Length: 442
Image (tube, rainbow, N blue to C red; front, side):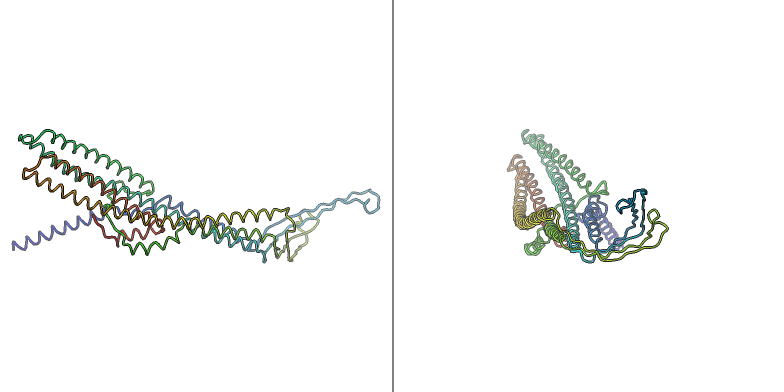
């Protein structure tokens, strides 16, 4: 019976521990949560839809001339006649007036310039979508970069807590040795200096962490007042995954913006050239005509027919506009080629930085392992009385330096990885990799 009670108590303790751990895990504000918060309530995110919406409205404007245009009109004609022009005496000066009021409609069923403008507007619509994607990709990158920056200082604060714990032990040891007459005051002063140095580092890390959170809150409107971030860890991206993902760089929004800009400007030049071609329209009107003012309350009238218009001479205006548009086409083409070259160069640079950062992390981890062993050996020598506190202080200082380097190396690798995913415009895959595929290493 007693064994059964002990088993039940042990099971209850395990359940409480699991629930507490689960609650602690759920309270962590993750990168995915930050990204979702940006989409849900970010003001800048809402502003990113402006290029897309503006392009859609311009497309509707471009399509309008291909529809029937209807308008109301009113015309009044006044003429004064003189009998002298007919050889009669000029005894009378008659005023003759007539008016027409009604509705007129027009439909262009052959207008190549309008069709070219529609094609340009369609490319501009794609350009607006790509620009929105570009803004949103930049916003997600900025949020995650600020999140990563805050992670860095959270990690530094945790490292300083570890160092302060070791500093306190070292200071206590030096104090006891001095009290017992087997230590030297210099070692005690050095141990105390370590404590004060790391206290300052703790204050600096906390201040930097608070500043990083404030910068994050600028983009995330409804960020909780007190949060705990994910731990900064090393999630190495495999080489085969890197090779698979880099192909997406050709579809990055910056490339598409340049491509659609070139196509839109080319169609605009085509529309300018087509303005020299005839426009055939169906024209009709219906209304009231008579001698009353504006033809009101008179006999019905109407007309229907085909209208053909063709510019004959514009004083060189159309040729100048065509030359201007040709310059814009050439500029857009050069910009498109330049963006493609820059994308290729940036991709190679991002891959090289990622590989360099990976090597730095591995080197920093190796140094950390050696620094911990050095500290263990120094502590062992102190316990057996074969060393002074100076070796332990040096080992402690080396460990602090290596821990700082380790945090910087982790931050540099994760930042390089984030830059790579931003370059291929697939920050969502970065989040998925962090959540599912990455294998964290402390």
